[in-house]
Length: 510
Length: 102
Image (tube, each protein chain N blue to C red):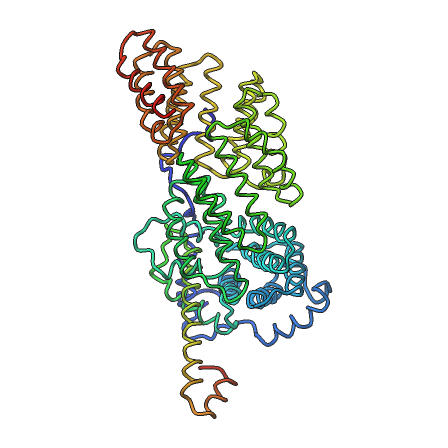
């Protein structure tokens, strides 16, 4: 098993790291306070900065003699003041959109410097947020979507802000106060950061995020009352519903997930750009149809959806649709065909940027290559996936890769190692709350155990999977469970009671 | 060098790496003036002495404290402005609006 796939002993979401720099900061703060006691600390002059900003604005910040290409304090002070003014802009404004756009481009051209807080990325978040907001409000959906993708990318780099938001989302402490919520949920930019972080976290730690979402939705519903850009409330509520739907999907609650998606679509319909939200919801809906075995339906509906995603410039959702197409083809036995859309996804810009998406894509490609007998390529994809995990550990992607490795061992004939890998994967699926996948992996384990003549253990795995199969109405898996038990009984001629129970469950559920 | 304090070079480095970026954050996020933001950030550093835990994420902690103090500062300022607008004699109101609340 590649090193990157081994579970860390302390496998909790790591959102901070104690380094020697952390220790130095604590000491430095103490010494700074001692040294500046009673002193007047100089700060930039608001008057001077306002004057500089007014001089620069007509020229679009392009005059090099006014703005140094280094990200020095003077430049950052001016840009921070502009960021503050753009936040205060109460009405949709082409001027604000233009200023935000130019300021963002200026930032991108600045030479970076030692940045303790990810401030440059934070400024990019501010300007891309402002551009997104005004583009939406001015009825420019393609432009607003482009800015949203830019914001997502900037939010990844705004490390301290992202740490704060991730801590807030992952914290299970009962003493979370209203002040903490108020810090993150009170303004639109923070909510956009929260929904951006959630788009990754919901696929990394779905069970943890699912616990947090009801309180988040309630807070936004009751407390977020923007005086302007009012449809942002419905937009954020809809995005939170989409996250809830994804978490429900991971938990195997497909019907509940579909209902939540419908709620999300209704909320999106009340926003200025309903189409992109609706398209995202559609991708999710089809992924649930895939999980419930409706591969034909998924492959029939995807092309039309992909055309709309492409013409709308929704690159990330398009990449996800390619992944969905690939796994649907693979599940129908069209393994070689599945490689094309999976490669398209892997080579896309969203996959290049997002380690989470990339790891999933590599895992799916490895799986298809294993099934297609392309062992060498499968190994390369697995190695690349392990490296991608090293860049950003994603528990769900890591667990999927373990199951893929198990499949590889099984096809190679090393069934004992396959069983070990499946069991490890199943335990991790359970700890992540992905019960559908845990039950499915139990059946893979049962099948492998049957191959090695371990019928009793096979039956134990099947029986352990049954309660989940029944509760989540996993019909295809129920039939597989029946077939496995029947074969095991045929070989052992025992435990007919178990066989009758399964038959009752499966046939009773239709 | 100040006794048990920082050298001028260390002061300059800390000022540019930590103090100013936090001031700018308070300006961007909470629309404080640079002057008010400077006071808020210094208050955050004073609070941090003895409370900053290096085993957790100290930068994120500082961010949260600055945000919290800045939000409190704004609320306090707005409350004062409303009180002045309501109760102060006209001359005092005119002066308050020119020179600021404090």
